[in-house]
Image (cartoon, rainbow, N blue to C red; front, top):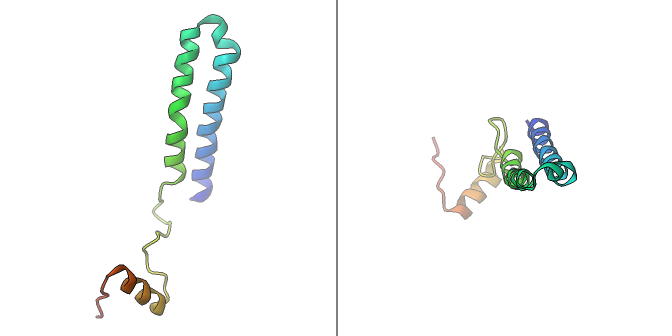
Length: 87
């Protein structure tokens, strides 16, 4: 999962860089308005790339999942104010 998110992040950021560089290297020669539009689109891509890169996958362990160590989980639950249900 991590490799897929990393690949998607680099593809999005590569596209952002391509749009920005192409806007001011050759698109501006034809239309400044189109170059500005490309830069606006490129400006939106980095936050989207960050969200894609930090998205939790179905197999990813999340910060509040049990670690498997009963003593540690009990200690963290006590700190968080949670009570474990003993069955």
